[in-house]
Length: 199
Image 1 (spheres, rainbow, N blue to C red):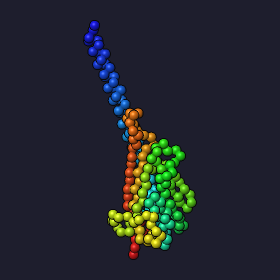
Image 2 (image 1 turned 90 degrees about the vertical axis):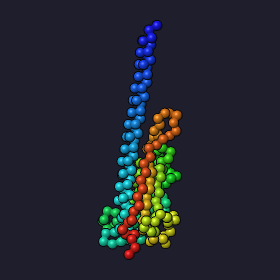
Image 3 (image 1 turned 180 degrees about the vertical axis):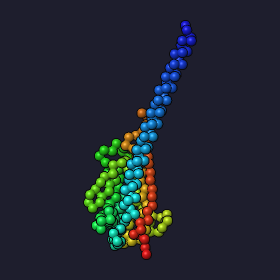
Image 4 (image 1 turned 45 degrees about the vertical axis):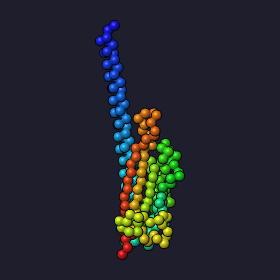
């Protein structure tokens, strides 16, 4: 029996296993990095829309809108603004529905987020799993107002904080037996719209 030949086969077997393992790990890592970059891009797109809308609450060309809010709730905000600086006031609504999943969603945690401008609704299908809106009647306060904010308290809103979380559509599992794992991205920002300031 040629022990040298047997040892060569054993070593070759170990090397093959190591190569397959390294290739799998690299492939998995690449998939994870790619998914993370995609979600960051999606997150930035949503951020840009929010950053465009929220600071303009109550804005109208050459004036300030008297009635600024229609609704101020934990998962929905409706406000008036002249978004495009045309002189025409529009009703803008951001609404998160935690009980309604988009038809295309494969991730069971994903819910519906939509943006409506003057009755035209656009769904935002980027994997939103949480979307919270907080209202503050003092600058820098750590205690948000109770929601829904009553219409009699709309004029007391000075700051609005929005926080959202999103996940990728498909789970990334190292092994088939692993529990579902999703890449998660979060974002949070507090706004102080100029037209909510008290004189």
